[in-house]
Length: 458
Image 1 (tube, helix red, strand yellow):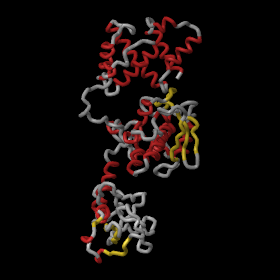
Image 2 (cartoon, rainbow, N blue to C red; image 1 turned 90 degrees about the vertical axis):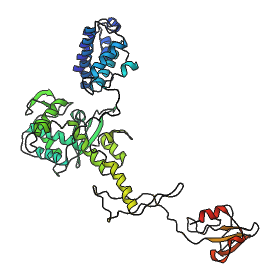
Image 3 (cartoon, rainbow, N blue to C red; image 1 turned 135 degrees about the vertical axis):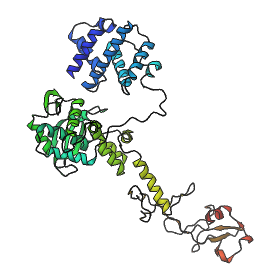
Image 4 (spheres, rainbow, N blue to C red; image 1 turned 90 degrees about the horizontal axis):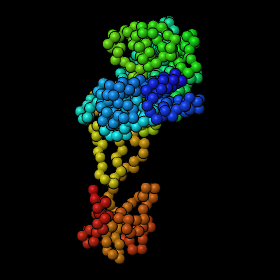
């Protein structure tokens, strides 16, 4: 982080000569320490800070072309620059806006970042209703993860085994590249490889774990640590050295995202993968994070468990984002309903207990999936239809029906309408005339209770 902050300080001293903050800065160590803290604020890691500083150089070049200064440019000028950046690629506008916020933070000037005129220029298009969804990183197949495990267990050089093991850790640990590269205290337990890393949106070091034995059953984690030790790795605050442009050897620099991605794609064109260069270019390091997330969604694991495995907050939408198979989880739920209806299940009307879901019906197999029907966890009490038992209130001459057995298996003491305590045939109330089966009386001789007869109507 110190080199990134030094780079930011160099840019501040070069382009901030006319700003009040630069004019008030003295050369004392206390003031310099305050400045360095300000320059590094709101940047999670050195890479993020360097990105902001590099993009800010484009803004300073724009000011030079427009013959403006940081203190004189208006919101229309800032919006014009941000719009030109957003048209370069789909993510450039967001990054340029972050650089704009950094310039405000570092130089102490107002660049109208809160203005809606400026903020609305971050996205490359206006109408997004028909814009295709951004293509996510291609998710490696289970067979490809097995091949990476085979590379770790092979007799190839330590360079190939170190990077292959890193890719296995990213797949089995559901990790970003930055999570793995900045991990510390790598150690083995009987079941897992574990470490801790400063993860995105986490205030403290976050522990993570990856199954020690992979899809092939090979102890890839132990073999990977052996390969790292053979290359004098991991470092004090990083795991891997950078690869050269050919993806064949380490250099003396700390690996960045681009170095690891070059190494991955160079290895993909070699055996056992033997992909073409165009096919290898479709894969990104971020695709490894999709493997377990997609599998967990298709196995219908609880969402809280998936959030914990991916180190997301509870209820995060990132689980859906990292599901690389579109509509599979949606179809699983719909297939459950289709099978239930095909087996005779029906919906009920309002204020009624739902019917229990039927078991899996083998006579109606699914055509595109093999989804097992999950029985509901709550116990649904079935209603058994029996002939109504009538009881007459001698005083009012109103004909009621008796509730019968209560939920606890005991005889109810009330009518179906629950308005009169009629007792039971074994223990009748004083004004109750018992028993009156349906075939032994003519209801036309009595005034009937509307509520009782509505509930007992078939």
